Amino acid sequence: MKFQKETNIGSAVHGKWYGDACGAAFAMELIGERWTLLVIRELMLGGRRFSDIRASLPGLSAKTLTERLETLQGLGIVERAFLPPPVAAQVYQLTEWGRALEPVLQELGRWAVRSPLHDPGLPLTPVSLMLSMRTMLDPDRIGELELWIAFDVGEEHFAGRLRGRELAIHPAGNGVASPDLRFSAPSASDFLPVFYGKRSPEEAGGRLAVEGDPELVRRFLDLFALPPKCGA
Image 1 (tube, one colour):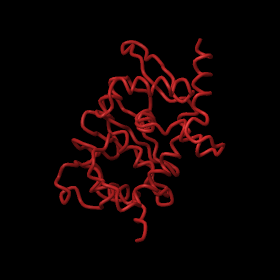
Image 2 (cartoon, helix red, strand yellow):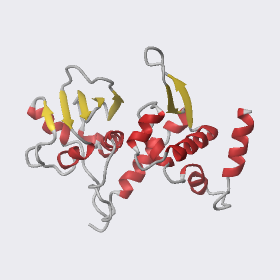
Image 3 (cartoon, one colour):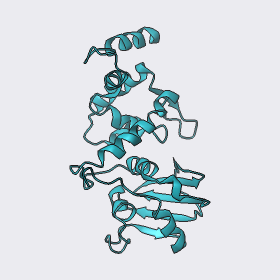
């Protein structure tokens, strides 16, 4: 039955909008429906419960989320898993093929923020913030710098490991003990003026609390930069 369902979904998707063999056209048929990319984005750092995804995307109805998850499962992009006791909860997570979409999201993000129409004042989810850091990091500036970083965004906590040419980020449950640096704020948007606007936490209104050696904080923040606006 599962194979039959997946086969039906696959045959219904390919060519449904464009009738075009171009891979980019087919990609849009796979992930171009409204909300689909944002659901994928919210799963990019690990499996999440249905209720957690809905809480992160308040404009998305339960009915639409159910439909998108069912379609993504049928396409082989998302799968269900069960967390072990004491949690014992069902979560949705990306398959290996689904996780391969992160570079696609990164390139889309770098491209889109160059538009003068991009509005950074709109709401931002904690996962989206973490992914933006991975996207806007300049690996050539890292050098020999190695750090453990805690990111506390409202009630959500993430652990970052800066090493080599990348920043690995994972959900951290109840938080991270004894990191080299800690950044804490009520919302994801509170990080933006400091990380990308290059304002001090005080200049940005004091909503982002920073802990750690000031020189390490400076070096870490210097790793992030937005691409120039188009036409600039």
